[in-house]
Image 1 (tube, rainbow, N blue to C red):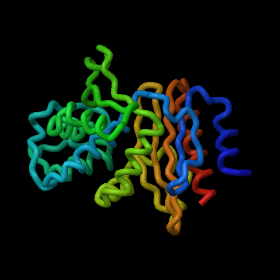
Image 2 (cartoon, one colour):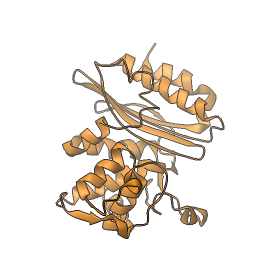
Image 3 (cartoon, helix red, strand yellow):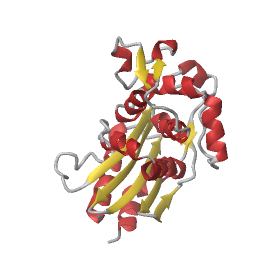
Image 4 (cartoon, rainbow, N blue to C red):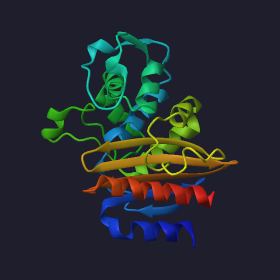
Length: 246
């Protein structure tokens, strides 16, 4: 049975809740609602990272994070007393521990306008940055960060291809409880690079599974699962199928 058929069977009961895009190296091999916009959650950090790295700034420059309001959710920066951090450290925290405070500091450094200009210039039509992370007031007023499975995977693949430094941040991602869930402790023969996102009724993951020079990239975005364990289990099973197909 092909990988595509197996994924079809897995998602059959949840087709309206799931978007998927999958590449085997450079060949698009699976797509399901891949251009459907969804709240991006932390996947918007891929757009922030791509915008920043393309500017070729000095990543050793210090950023005064105290000028950005601290926020909750994922991350450790809010717990630290240090008031200045290198731009490289903020980007590493934004990806490897999905640090919302670090992400907001980078947004303030760049401005939302610059991120959205970069997205427009690079022909991203389904991805936009409309608010800082964890900005509840902005969300209530209708400002939502958006992306799709296709564009989230395009961002991720671009970063993996053009910015080697970022690959280490994805490889050392601390949130492994979705696509890589069923193989983290035992799959020593495969390297997994990923970035997750989550929010109310939202669970996303974008990942590369790489084994002996062969890699498969996959984005799975979900919205509307009332039982979150069902969404996570589905993503973990998709990840396992991808791993077995390598």
